[in-house]
Length: 222
Image (tube, rainbow, N blue to C red; front, top):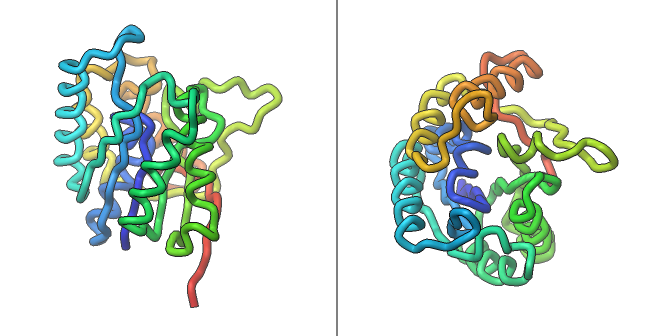
């Protein structure tokens, strides 16, 4: 199976579904990660620092052992300025690799880039355009998803859980590759925060550790 993880930023793939990526790889699936934006620091782009971040992403890729990272290099913190800028290259990439399964960020994350990517994915994955996509799920991103005010908008409501007990260590090791994005506890993206969330999601479905998702669409072929 061809599996695609769409990550607004470098590290979102690990935060949202690092354990699931490792699980897919062990099952023999071909996993690709499409990184939409480059990285800015203090709202300024610095190519040298961005190259360091790409090295971190590639190190995390080696830990999770997935097939292919792709960097679109669009403008961090400004993806919402023109969603079409995301749609065009993402559409081209998805048409080329034809994934059967897609993971994308939650549509109501407390991050304008995540929201813009979610809107672009909604357009790109319309059924008439991608008949090869059989399953589409949204993942949660610690330090973004749970920060969304829960007043008047839909919060993350998981209805799919994956057992990552055997993959949590890999997820934490991959996260550690992103040295510039590390945060101390009680930040949700700290190692302790990631483990606590995996325990919480596990408790919700009778597992030790889990990653959770919202199923957007599933189609069974004959």
